[in-house]
Length: 592
Image (cartoon, rainbow, N blue to C red):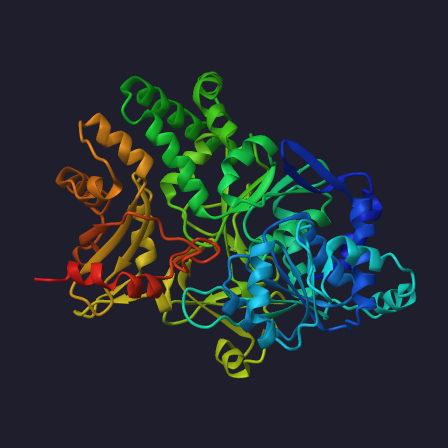
């Protein structure tokens, strides 16, 4: 299967669609776009500036920033100069950034805003190899020796290194290392996955086959570009001639979807859960609207199930669907900016109920599966082949098998070269060419992959019962009155849970039931609220074995956040940190 150097792939697209919009950003009500031709010129400037500053092929430049067009320009410019780019999450602490800077040996660092600059300056003395910082934010005055983005680009407008740049591109190979991506991980120290251009472009053949994207399509870039999921996707859609719209503040994603009207995007289940919960809350206490909504969804489900199965749609069903679409279904699509050619979910399971809800509205959410070490794709559903509850079939050229203990193993050209500076971890993770994902799952008779849990996340109770918390958290967490849930129970006699309510929905319910309160704490301690959640958890758990049921729970006043280190960048909970931080509340649930 053909693989390419990413810079060459992007340059090919620039030659085909020079006038098409490539990188777009909406700020202060104005949308500004950089065309593919302009993007190519800026790539050249970045590459030449890196050469002027003495970075050799294979040396490392870091990117410590939130999403913005400059992020991608720096990334592509590094690749064009055959410099290895190393992303650092914008939310990382100074200590976390220091670790990556030193482990990767980063010589030049692109920094997004003042917060990141302050973090870096606080650890400069501990990162002696870091020679220079380039600042994206034009409002920050660089310290002596550092450069603004404009100063950096001006340096790259010199043609002095042009011959050197051409020589580097002639010697470029798909086997060149493109990036080190440090695993965010729910446990342990981050490890830098070494990924080549071939590792990353290997998955593009599958995306080409399963999704028809090209010039005129728009993607909303809101997941962190420091994560392999959004990064790989953003490079791919640019290689197809699509426009990438950048969102600096991920909290504005739903609002931005309505504005940008993306025809494709990747996301995590939390976004879909929020949209579903919002729709449910709006009609929950209005019987007539609820009935119309329910019937419209049933009609939509029947219609789209037949459509995707290539079955004949009876005229009467077509008429019912047209009415349901006008009254209800189109309004659901409007929330996300209309129809989608590719609407993907990854990073965690999405419940079947929510999958079917979106399908009923004409929005097929294609769940996929990947890990940083696989650049990141291993499997994905598509409009031409999907199963609810599964993460799809393996990507082309990638083999997946299930080990005797249920662990998912993968082999293919997308698998990383290893972990940076960690030969023992590499040897333990890749054996005989098979990458051990650490996830548990199974393949059905049609080759669709299902994820059931993660080995390191397994809860083993005091009675020796093995419990995969992810499935239970997904089941209970789809409730539109629940924002987040963290199951606890390892080495304990029974399961408990820390639950963050969906406060807006809960406050509405409380007012409708004449429950008065002055604070979240007062609301959550009301016995009627506790009983309300007890009943909802019990209803959601009817199909679970007794040992899988939550016996006690605590309602939390505040959300778990990335900033507090309680969530990964893809919004998965860090159970070990939550368990330590809220040990007193957890212990109280096991008292007596």
